[in-house]
Amino acid sequence: MSDAIQTFRAQTGANDANIADLKTFLAMLTEANAVMNLVGPDTLSDFWNRHAWDSAQLLDLAPEAKTWADLGAGAGFPGVVLAILLKGRPGAHVWLVDSLGKRCRFLQTIVDALDLPATVVNGRAEEQAITVDIVTARAVAAMEKLLGYAQPYFQRGAKGLFLKGEKAEAELKEARRVWQFEAELTVSRSDPRGRIVSLGSLRRVR
Image 1 (cartoon, one colour):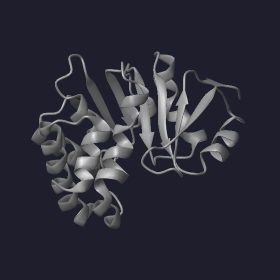
Image 2 (cartoon, rainbow, N blue to C red):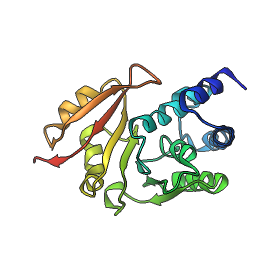
Image 3 (tube, helix red, strand yellow):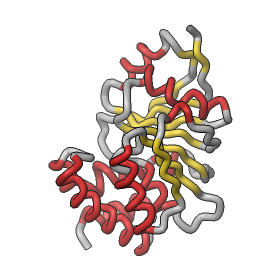
Image 4 (cartoon, one colour):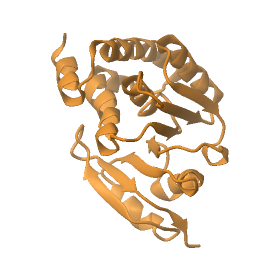
């Protein structure tokens, strides 16, 4: 077992079945990425930290959460990783929401192959009537626009955990022109330049 996988296992408590699923996911992603450009090809060599651990760290911030919606799920980060790690937990389910059909077809092949507790939804995020504990997203849009996608989920009781880069604070400042919220920033454990934005409530101010 590689050092990267051993580190990931130690960070997350992942079991053998989780690791096997993630290896399969990586293999299928690598194959699909050759024709679909789902992620930067050079990032796949750092899959276990840059993608898997980056996604999995969200579980530590919401340990009681069972239901998640990943908006703009794309290549499956963080949603597929969350579904793999939540597999077998009673009541756990992840909705993988994406507006692009070919990405949804890719995600469906992963869900089917790994028998994940997940539903792929092909449509606009803000138009879905999904009730979850946590709404999340990674690399989808700037905060101001992302919060527009997420607002309906907040209205149904969700909290937000959004994976952001080093411009998170600037994005939040810009978003406050349109939205009222209290945000907590946590330094990403996969990359100290990144931030996780936690929101408990959201209201449009104009």
